[in-house]
Image: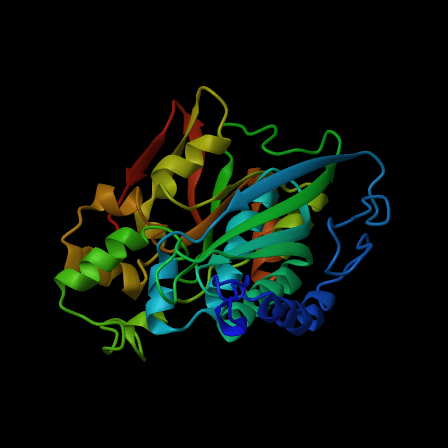
Length: 347
């Protein structure tokens, strides 16, 4: 066989050198996420973390995994991929804090047909930025180059986060009738409902580089606003003892996610007049001709997280989030019954 006809892994579509170059590039970003408990850098067969060094005496570990859904399609089509790294972290760590846990470390999985080191690096650097903001160490991950599995330029992402809490401090706990529901502002559509978002944009005849009907800049850029990270104020509020439950408002909206943190026999009363529907959601509702119920069970509608607090501590909890730059408003109360009862009008 002629030398130039010999098969190699690279000729089969997998470039080990490119993968090694990617690891070298992202090491500084990962290093910036180090926190107490981190034991080793990238490159080993496994990642180590010491909960005792992180200050825990009798820790319960909490794990979460997620992706960013079809928002990824929009990021790939526009080439604006850094923000989905932040989304990936947020979708995992915002769930962890709802259990009462502090996120400790994060691992990512990046899969593609042909590795484009620049694109992959921008994604992972976005992941590192999200971890840094959340106080969570990026201690490992996997980059998989799989020819024939993905279309040209396509890739997929998954994230895995582990957190900890002291035994007996898990949420929800002691939720009672009359507790206050505090709505924490979302930063946009976050990472849910994008299959519908894409259909609405198509029906409206808009391309991603067209001007956004509801904001400055392009439609794609406006919709790609990264998911808000609520970790630091949420952990502070939990440790101060003011929070009885936290609900991350993701797929299913307020309708499906609030009942997940309420005990049997209790429901939520939500006043839709307590906040103004952000412009992006007004456009989605109008352009998609969506009724109110569909909006509330598909999108966050401007409320990215709900904190449940005793009436006497609601102001204290609100101040924790406001101090971290998040808008907060009282949107309702815990009531007898079940499910979510909405009053007022979304708008």
